[in-house]
Length: 287
Image (tube, helix red, strand yellow):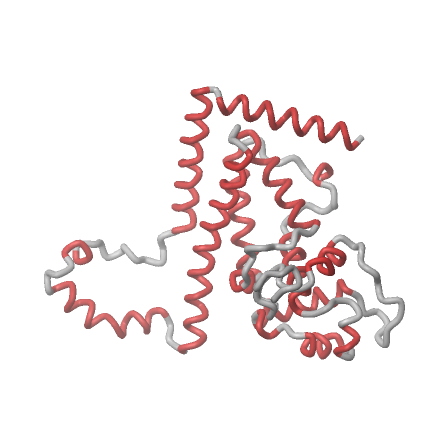
């Protein structure tokens, strides 16, 4: 059982599955730093960087304290002076990679203004996330249902909500827009990653895999039992078709229809005004 009383996995494959208090201390820089150690130059930043490099190259399963000690040229016990274990390390790794696409700086107020058009913001959000998943495919292997929120995660959410504010939707709906877009991107990225993994594990290319099934599929199509399938054009399953572009355009079109509906009945204007007032009050309170 996890220290928060949950039964979440404690093998480093689920965020928030370790010592949550310790993860938060490390993420927000409030934890005690080792005052001494056998390896000069070792730091939490170096450990997280090395862990991400191993995960990118070999997958999350390859990340262990023993492996990292080898990569960093230090004793395994030295690492525990900085991070309790793999579960907490995963929290730090996730926040680091989530922050990679974000503008530099810790204060969202210092970031460049998002695109004026929320459609462009959603487009950029989707493409940026897809690129992040390509660079760090191990992100698709972890359970992020209970993410420990660090500076990068909160800054990313702040920037996303700011970019989408002009949609005029209710706050829960804005969160749902982000969830919908991210889920769409993750689904396509996972399909691509699974296909690549299947090639590595079996040694068969996609072409070889489908060529092996061709005689059986051709007989099935000629049987008359699958008239709809048999009528499909030859390019139906072509790899040339851009499913990401198609799906993203349809998502944005759907959001456009909702925004138009809310604008017509006036609820969009009221939601935007309310959000603007709340933001102004929060900004004034910070000064």
